[in-house]
Image (cartoon, rainbow, N blue to C red; front, side, top):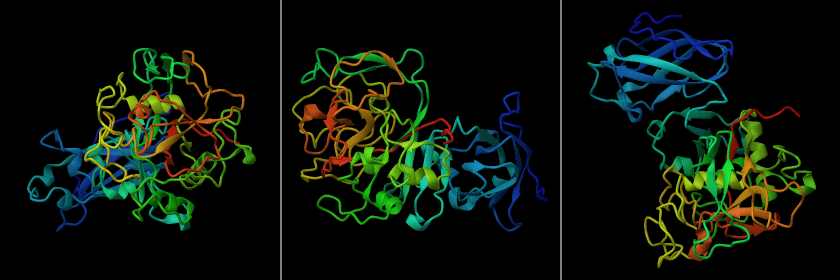
Length: 413
């Protein structure tokens, strides 16, 4: 049903084609109530489901993303076919502009599920009793409600950033021969091509997030703050153990239903295969184009591990609230320090060859890989190329993980 105060009919952002791309039709925008400055948008989606986002304009100039965050309804999420509606609470986001609002226009984009916007956030606030965890999507960091550094994304919500595939040229994984303290056996510099986009957690998974998904009562190192990274988790608790016939890569993307990744998949509708990253995915995302040892482009120097890239000199002798270390150029926090992060692969203790979408050895090895180093590591152990080897049943106060998801459909089982 069209709103009686129609202001603007939007052009279609994605046209349907032989690929049956999602299509937006019949867009109308008006005031929610005559006395209200909130704006209601009605539209129809076909060839869905799709992820729907919107851009508002005044005087044909797009409004900044950070002034359009109070959105409710069929927006910034996965929408199915049919008549849809969402509301922008303009007085909250953009006070003092009542005179301009009647001139506001909107365009709507419908993203295929295999080409989502840049950021994804998972709402865990329902805890273990929730039947589902809603997914929300944003095209920029400025559009994220409350901002990236809000505590909600360290406690009740999980925030992930899309990492674009490398392109045919790939990236250099490993360390050059002149890098100090390198392990020449494990860190041969080689070219890796990643052919699929994937999500990576902006932060390491925290105590609060673990509790809301798994329901277990846990205590982080030295504090009761649920914003600290989850510690003492095994590889099996993250995605599944060999005793459950979960043996990546021979069992592919399959994870245990009782693992953290398994519960997330079930409660997010199996849209994306949430998991641990592969070693190659971890290093490519962490480097963000940097060829040197650390995310600020430096090599090893006099700084201690707790000083490296930190906002402050910690001296805590423990983990710290996630996000306390400065982000990489792609906006991922704590990739070097805080806790060491599990990766999916078995660790092959020898030089690695050039590869496309590598997943590590198929034959069972002694150790799984873990990356990033932790708060108590020597500075050389925090290097991008450093490859840690640990038994997949290891449980230490320096061990945690970062969530990932390759953006492909989960195969039916």
